[in-house]
Image (cartoon, rainbow, N blue to C red):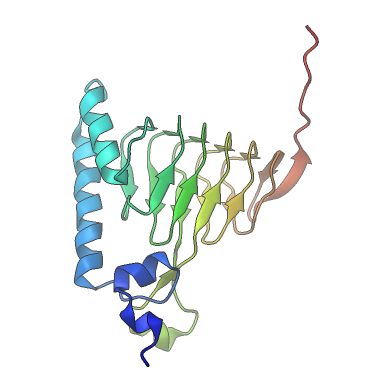
Length: 196
C-alpha cells in the first residue's frame, strides 16, 4: 500500500509543513502568480484605491479590507489568511510556504518580515534544494514594530506589542510587550478600566 505522502502534490506537502520540492511546476506557477501580483500592486498608485484593493484580494484569493503600502512582497498569498482591518506599512514581506494566519486589527510597521520557509540543517540535504515550512500565527490586535523578523513556527498572542528590530524565534503570549534579539517578554500589558 502506498504512503499517503506519495499521493500528495508537492504544493499539498508544502502547506502541510512536510519536505517538498520548491522547483515543482505547480509550486513555481503559484509563486510566479504571487510575484506578478505584487509587482502590479507595487506599480499601482496609492490614489487608485479600488485597483489596489482588487490586487490585494486577488493576491490572497479572498475578500479582505487589508491595506498594504508598497513595496510589498509575498511568496504565495493564497497560504496567508488575513482578518479584518490588517495594515502593512512600507517594505513588508511574507514568505508563506506554510500557512500564515493573521488576526483582526493587526498592524505591521515598516520592514516587517514573516518567514515560514526553512531548510534542513544538514548541508547534504540542502544541496538537494528541498525545503519545508512551519506555520506562523498572529492573534487579534497585535502591533509589530518596524524591522521585526518573525521566524518559522512562531505564535504571537492577541493584543501583544512587539518592539522594533525584534527577532521573534519563539512563541510570545497574549497581552505583553516583547522585544529584542531573541525577542523576549519585557512586561505584561495591564488592561485599564474606565470609570464613566
